[in-house]
Length: 105
Image: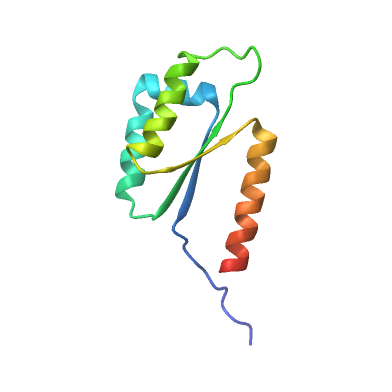
């Protein structure tokens, strides 16, 4: 007879944010709450995938503020922060990460 599908829960979670979304979530407090929940989740490898703003993209907060939040997330909060240029580079990163996880597990 057939075998039951094998399920696996990994210690990796990726939170992707565009520059505009990062600014909005910083402004309304969601970013702080998301970091708190990720820290309390017990996952050992939370990753923030932060996309750079597009040229001329309006931002809810100044770019230096977004950069400082990213640096704090990595240095103070201890999360791995991956910066990408655009959604295409983010998709490439996720594809590579997925391949590494498939090979490992």
